[in-house]
Amino acid sequence: MDEKLKKVRELTDKHFSKTFCFAKWYHANIYFQTGETHSCYHPAPHAIDVDEIKENPSALHNTMIKKQERMEMLNGVQTSGCQYCWNVENMGKDYVSDRHIRSSSIYSNDRLNEVATKEPDFNVNPEYLEVSFGNECNFRCGYCHPKASSRFYNEIKKFGPYDMVNNHRCDIDWFNIYEEESNPYLDAWWKWWPEVSKTLNILRITGGEATIQTSTYKLFDLLEKDPKPHLELNVNTNLGGKPKQLEKFTDSVNSLLSQDKIKQFKLFTSVDTWGERAEYIRDGLDIEVFERNMDYFLENTTAPLTFMITFNIFSVTTFQSLLEKILEWRKKYNNIETHRWQRIHFDTPYLKEPLQYDMNILPKEDYMPYMESHLQFIKDNLDDDSKHAFSTLEYEKFRRVVDYMRTAEYPEERIQEGRKDFHNFFQEQDRRRNINYQDTFPEMAKFFHQCKKAANK
Image 1 (spheres, rainbow, N blue to C red):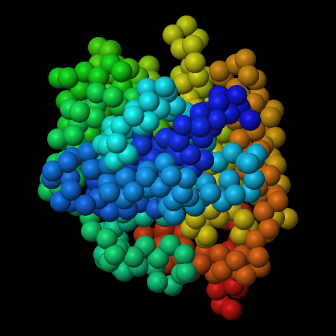
Image 2: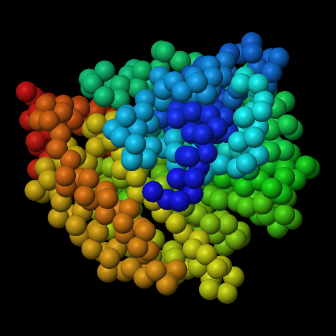
Image 3: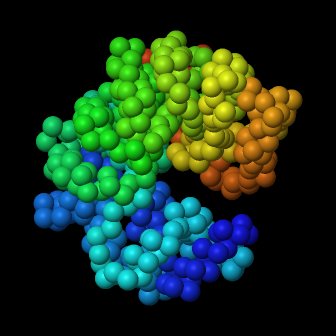
């Protein structure tokens, strides 16, 4: 076990309990379009009481539900919402859960003393905040959800949910979407901002699509007038907005950086392969616009860019095309004289839900050779001493994806369910969007036939 992690684990166990997690106090994700929050991705988001935030704007994070969970953690209770970590820890004392990792990443003596000395239900200002100002988005990626995409939401309003599948129906009748102009949760956020921004170290804006939302630029204006030189600002974007809009966004970021009004800026974007196949996966993507916008941003700022690759069933056959582009971009944007560190990063988490996008419903004998080939390409271009090559860490991260696909053994019933949903979902999606997965991925024709056969059963 990492020594820092081990030390933090011992300190929190000693001062608090064996179920304590700093993230419940100092991390928060807030979804303003639905009025929901959680402190990490494992517990399901819960509703924020709209009456509570009128009196206490910090209840956007300090909800009564979180306060109850904090009390339980202080008393050694395994809170019901955090079952993901308890499942790991219940396997034995040597297993390290995300509770340990997150606590280690944000541990400090000041935070430890604050929790130890204050009343258990005190209102805490988080260290890390990820916010979604709204669901306004110009994309409707198939594995996304109407909660996070206005285009997807409008599609479901027009055609109804995907009721021909068991997974990813995308029903919208169980939640409300608040518009930016009349959102009580956003009103509370702007009231809370002067206080929370004093101690906030990292603020990450996600979507919807952040670069086209008015609240993003309102925040930029506030930072121009009242700088936060201690703040790292991160933004998720699909890089698919109109070039003029992206130029406005880039110029705003560059102004904040050049005048030291923020400490650092990081841009995150998503793409899962390259060319027309990438455009199929992320409906709304125009590869030429994407690359043009990326070029403008990287040429006009010093900020790094990270590709969040949602490795899914459609990435398997042509992932190398994106790896080749990453090498190309690394040579173009890593200026040896001005950039000490790598500017072009990428991560390869694999997608498990919805099931029809899961690579493990593919027949392994046909598709593992593709995966091995992509991994070999990374290995052939690996050099830890060059910013123009791949790193050992990147190789190991993707090797885990390859190994997972090789060793994962789904029950036959689950495989057939996934293939049935694949056929039914993509047939319907293509009808609604006037696209065609069979023409886009001709190398997968045999698999498509297997899915049709499963659906017809």
